[in-house]
Length: 405
Ligand SMILES: NC(=O)c1ccc[n+]([C@@H]2O[C@H](COP(=O)([O-])OP(=O)(O)OC[C@H]3O[C@@H](n4cnc5c(N)ncnc54)[C@H](O)[C@@H]3O)[C@@H](O)[C@H]2O)c1
Image (cartoon, rainbow, N blue to C red; front, side, top):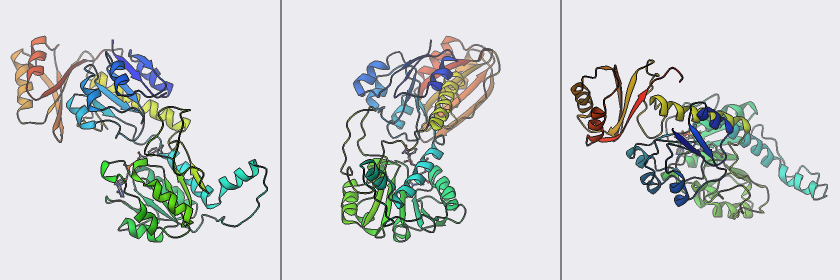
């Protein structure tokens, strides 16, 4: 029986989807450290995590049964993706499920910072009637600078314009400007015109420390800053200096370089207790709607990969959009190093035992290749052994379609 381990309190719908497919599921609420994870992965084929569990090369080298990892989040930099591919472990994520949730929190915070809402709220809870218009503004007519115009950046652009914000954006890739948004040719150009700067770039290693003292100095006096993307992109010490000097009049931060692993853990940051600074514990994408959508999306990806080998939207192996094999059919899913002659080797091994190929799809991505071969008869053990013994082979799985699935 296939076994799955789901960590970090994933939405129950993930268990429902996997159980319905005959996969035995163990759930745990927190993340595990490297040694704990290695122990827990013995005999486990499917791993589900969020952003706190690190799937390192050492974990992958010591989890021989693992076939697939699903990260129930957008980011994947907690997983050694290249090493996973070379160990025959496909990885899937949820690139779109919580986009709207992040956009809504970003907009809520832009208004809250511009009205100094959390300060007024705190004063009243402390028993002080602090009615004043000083430092409170409308967002209408202000310029929003979006850094990173991807899934979140573009949706934010559209909804922000409906509030009357002027939108400018900067992205390192060519991006179509939506609505009336204006593309800036550099980050510096954006920083010179934006009243509100919000980061929505991805967490590729090259982005580490991309926003520091120099960028904060270039921001307009009286502007506000938000980061709901990744903590290691920003020098928060530099942000603290600029908030204390009054150059930046408000900030909202949802992500940190070091984040506690479990709910209830202690937290510290140089940004605590600063005026008009909203700190949230990485909840940009955490709504019940997003969690349910992520749970459904990723667990379906895991189920379909285990079941019939489809890799559509995988983040580390070639994407093959495969139909379920015909009922009673047999599919050989072969992950390999992308070198010449693999297809010939696969077909030779099959023809030797008299197995006829019904259809075959090959995809390659960098140094990884993936070929799905549908055949007209059960695959004899000697053919499987020959495929496994081929030098470029990473993993061979023989998948059988049954009426129940
Ligand atoms: N706070 C949360 O809970 C939460 C939830 C979801 C996503 N996120 C984070 O939000 C970020 C954006 O997510 P997305 O789905 O929009 O990603 P995406 O990949 O769709 O978009 C990222 C964009 O940033 C651009 N980019 C990369 N490096 C850049 C740079 N140095 N300068 C300018 N542009 C750059 C890319 O070209 C791309 O268009 C990610 O870092 C993700 O991890 C956070």
